[in-house]
Length: 112
Image (cartoon, rainbow, N blue to C red; front, side, top):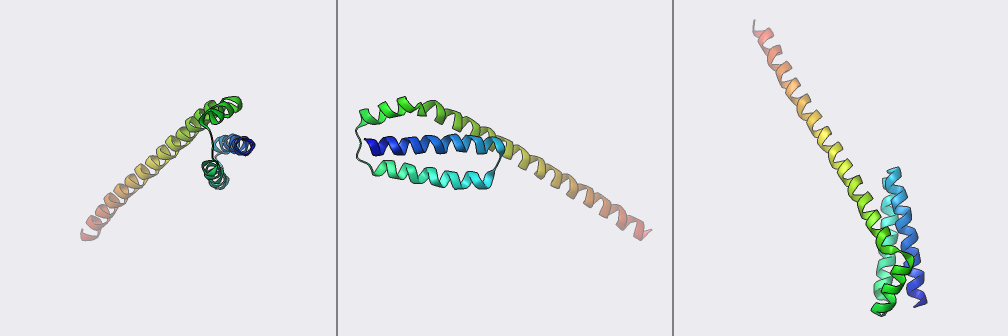
């Protein structure tokens, strides 16, 4: 049970760190921390646990609300990134349209 508690505390610390990294938009560090968090999850899965012990420690460490907060921040960051990508795409389309119309007028001027 102590191994479980230790791993869940580490999981909690990593999740708190991930929330801070999402707020700072530090993508490189975010990826490294996600990998560490995945390792901790794998370690937890390898342990033989009793469901009651697991629930007790999760409640004790307040992991459910922390996990909800992390998921909310992650979704917000993903939505911001999608929005930025759409803006870039729109800008590229506008630029292509402008270049085509400029090219067409240039060709007309050369023929006259």
